[in-house]
Length: 207
Image (cartoon, rainbow, N blue to C red; front, side):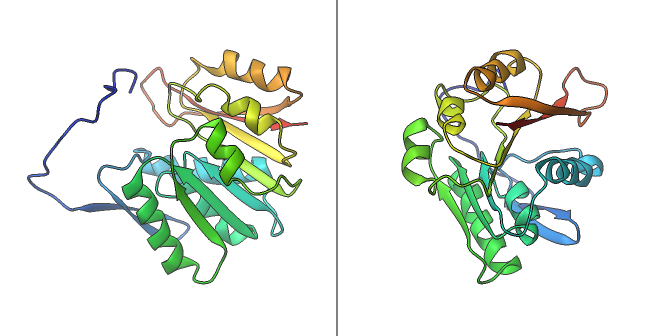
């Protein structure tokens, strides 16, 4: 992922399905083959359950899922909260998230927005801050776009879960949270990539 080119790479599918699927707690989600998804399916439910245990999601909460992809976290947590808002730049993934939400949770206030996650987008598209907000921030390995952490830190959210795909950006980004008034309450490492140097790390932040 560190070597991903800046320009979009053209490709052609010559064989195989148009969509793939993952099942979490008995709920099947279909997503396009071009969308990002965790590959270690044997650990995926543990990963998601751990995230929600740390967040302490309640039925009055609004779950804000940033870098949501096809809605893996948002849709997995939808039955445990009042409403869900997901944002991601990948259009095909967002379309899949909308279809899954309509199928699994018809009538529930679940919304997905396509757009590059920037401070400007967050200020214009996120709802008014509330202590009932629970935020999951799961950026790519390269980390957050400049200003994202500062913008989220200015909101009065109940809890924020920052998920790191590796340890490269942890020191820098956690220090930004701390300098903006947030405390690292808990860190939970999960080995989603056995045999590699990579480690998924969940960091809970509170004011």
